[in-house]
Image 1 (tube, helix red, strand yellow):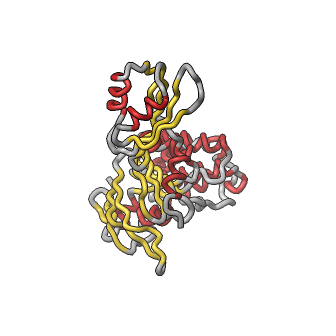
Image 2 (image 1 turned 90 degrees about the vertical axis):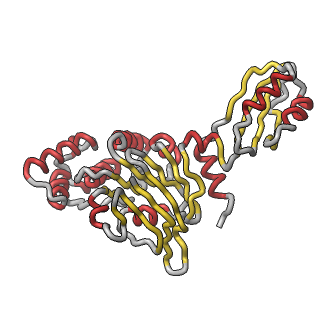
Length: 313
């Protein structure tokens, strides 16, 4: 649905986004992660047509951002990090104002406002001034604003920034419901948020994409590395290091504790190929008793830290 090729943005001599290639499918919830200054917000602003790229192409459905910017904007709802709200207006009046801007009138506008109030959990505050709302409710109003024209694509820049844990969970649930029907692109600094919400995560660092995969795949393997754990009986550590260390791609084997009955090992593999079948056959050939064998899942924070500190600025 969205196809980005060689996208680049310079601010003077500073390269904020460096030749990004990206494809986002219909109905996908994609998280855009990266440290401060990585180029997340610049990328999102170019995707929504608010900022022209220095070079590269953005195609949404059959339209290009260079030739059909207005048509693409009509397909999108955009919630920036600071929602553009009028604090003196009642929530109901504000949503009515947004409906008029989106050229919704009469019963069509009323129906859409009621629908969004239910979807975003705003029924209790519809007749309160926006300035009196909590940050969580203000974000819900901003979401309703972005959703008013029923866009096919929803772009959210740090939608849970500054919220407390309960508010984060509430906004997360709203995004997941929306994601069942629409394509959602969101940036976040909260890695657990991306893990819980997104189908796919793209990590950017110094303007470039350094990872693009599902959260499960990223946690299982980074840059071709796998971490495996084995629990063995009737096995000597020196024999295990000799046998399993001889398998091409096994780069490190360490003993996890000093239990005399069970040998617990942690292995690092640097091969792009899944080595588990070969390791299993080697264990079986030695008549060691295999009690446990699994691929270790690292949390997304560890993956993020590894990918964004390999080449520090």
